[in-house]
Length: 565
Image 1: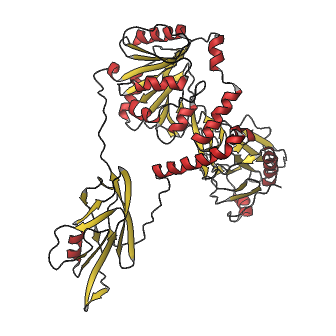
Image 2 (image 1 turned 90 degrees about the vertical axis):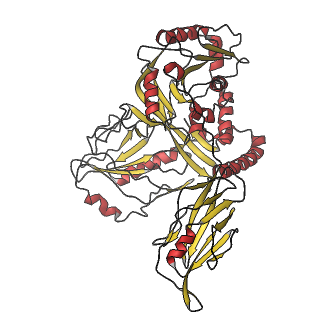
Image 3 (image 1 turned 45 degrees about the vertical axis):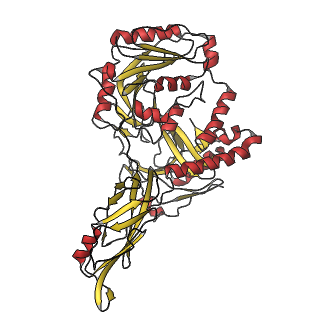
């Protein structure tokens, strides 16, 4: 039995009759509950939908309204009871009926065909009015329908599962501690008279004045010998507090301790003492925080002191031209003919730029030439091992990754990549297009529970938003194999050498939330005509057993319950 309840939606029945305008409207929904095994509650992601007929932006995205969709069967017209299902791009599914009951009937059928659901924030209820107010279209967007194929625990050897789950849980707990993912959210109380700093940073074991401490009040409720006084307290956990240059008669208790109490009958004098409060961490750590509890009467505030070991800058001299800014890197395996074409095409436009070739061919051949570094690896180590080797030898600020069967064109302008990267220092990776194909994607990640892990879904062609000021560039999570990378940033992520035959999306999975990635139209490179190579293809093609090993690897490494490419 599939039931969609209306809990949290006020005046649900009257909402339909109130719609009188021919446009898509926003519904501010709280909660939709579904009575179905494995799915108890979905929290919608309210969104203002585009008005009908308004064009959408972005490459390969077709947000068609229901009237315009070529996939629909029939329009819902007054008196027409025909149902329809509309499929949008990016594998999102929408179901639509002429009224809510018809829509729910179709959803029920879809749910029956879906074995497992995961909690997600991608359920959206869309209500659209047609040309007449009597005809109302309802649509439910069903995302993250995970089938048994995407549940990756099944690919872990059964006799090892218990041990792997135990080790995985322990490693995930340590990861949370290292990444401080369990940090508490601080809520500042309203109308607090306590003034304190945010973003205050100190070096470990060194004394520092705490800037900005003050009390902004006129109340004096504490009395001592019939004299009203102001009294504040500060408490820390991983350090000690002091007041510099305390004079006789000034009331400071707890000097050099973790709890400091300051009292005065004069507010100006109290604030003068607060301006001289120092903090010294007593526990050495290069990256942590200490929470300060700052109180006055029934008012209390908490603020963090960030303990950071100063870091030494690592800079790359950009020199005077593109040759000192960028290194071209590639990995080759049994494709020397294609590699030769690639190098010749590079030299036509960039005769002096450095080229690094990582080579894990079975019988290495000589690859030489002006400013070419050829690194021979043990045979068949795989694509990512080659990328890591090439990445480790970089001495330039940026690198350009290309496959060994690509071909530079007159439109292949590395300077265009660098111009964008230099203008926006936050960027880490810029992807282009290969033979007109701008392969790009976004990753939807639901962290799931601490016990089971999360779910990951790749959406081809998706993007987050346009890059302001650069037409045709969009923020994404992954790009094609033709991209400019910031050396320092990408080296921190690296390429997983476990992945030998197939691996590309996997790098961007590891980089999710760590690298800022964009994809740009117009930054293009060619692709050589594919020729049949049985020996190469036998290594390159991923067999079923290798695919299952990769999925089991994701299960542990990325703490995933399910994954959908």
